[in-house]
Length: 95
Image (tube, rainbow, N blue to C red; front, side, top):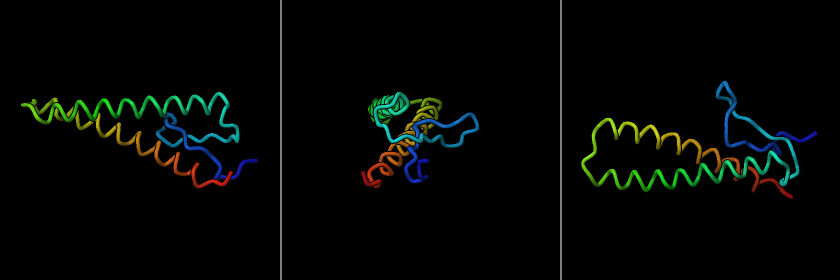
């Protein structure tokens, strides 16, 4: 049985919005690789969104566009924090 501090926080939530965890010691398992790929995509999307936000903030942007930008940035920040939390927990776990 895997200890609770060995659970990996996955980069997505369940249908009810609660965190999902993976219990495996195999970093090359299908689910581990899927989580790694999803984290990579999320971080890449956050980078692109940040670039778009920087461009929008130096031009005249409609309030509705700024509202959508804030919503998108909030989602990207949520995903990025989840990735950072997950990776931080894995760093703290002794091999």
